[in-house]
Length: 314
Ligand SMILES: NC(=O)c1ccc[n+]([C@@H]2O[C@H](COP(=O)([O-])OP(=O)(O)OC[C@H]3O[C@@H](n4cnc5c(N)ncnc54)[C@H](OP(=O)(O)O)[C@@H]3O)[C@@H](O)[C@H]2O)c1
Image (tube, rainbow, N blue to C red; front, side):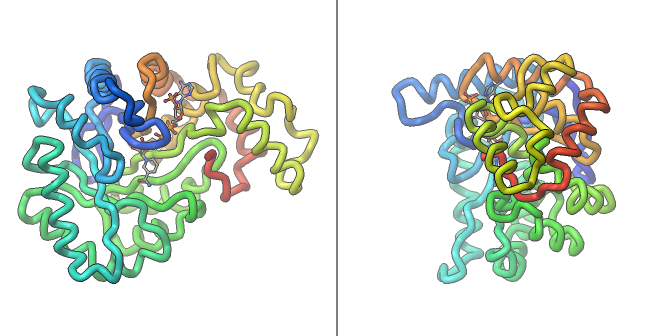
């Protein structure tokens, strides 16, 4: 495993982080045995050198993270979890933050969280978050219950990162989680210059999602882009739109190419990988540790998708 420093937090983190949410949620879909499988996946990640675990109140995976790390020295893992936003008509949003944290601590079996995020702050939530939620988060930090304050963007509705672009100028966070992938590299322009300037730690989500793991979804998405004139028809093979990446590089699969693309972006500290499959986990960590993709392939990707800022990869 390679390790890096998560910006000004000073936390030493593995460059591959285990995402315990996303479509796979560690394979937990209510089946019998799913919890044991999830605990096994987390332990497998730890054995492979991953020390960064990302979960959230609303993933339903804080409990399995707690089980998997019971018996592991607390300073060997960096725990990132998230508070679902209270609503502006909540009688006491600050109290909701404190109650949420207490529940998370209990499920995780710990007395502090390394990074506590406001979860999925969309542009419509931003003013409320600034005015009413950040202060209780900072109070928890002063009390030592959380070490650092983070935010995750609502990438599906904010693909151009407007919330992050504004809030990073105000230095509201210690760590941010941003959507960045070869299909939507717009954080390069709107987010990374700001995080680098202020030393904010960066966690990358949406590296793969559906379009880069399901060939049929990728074909549909590219056909739509050609149809609306966003990509020239002659610029790619609609039967195998990113096939050139496997022909022109040593990447064996598209998820591998997608994780390598993110890992070597200047400005990304931790690439999150979410899976319910033990083989995928092993392959994805290996991918994140491989060399950058060749420059010519990166340039081709930039010509295809570099100017688009609305794809999520879902
Ligand atoms: N706003 C937010 O706060 C927010 C939003 C989204 C995500 N996140 C965080 O970011 C993490 C990463 O996002 P994500 O879980 O969507 O991860 P991702 O790595 O972008 O994509 C995961 C998807 O790709 C598939 N996949 C992964 N590796 C594969 C492989 N080698 N071959 C084929 N398919 C593969 C997975 O299915 P399999 O299970 O079959 O492998 C899953 O469907 C989440 O787990 C969560 O912690 C946060």
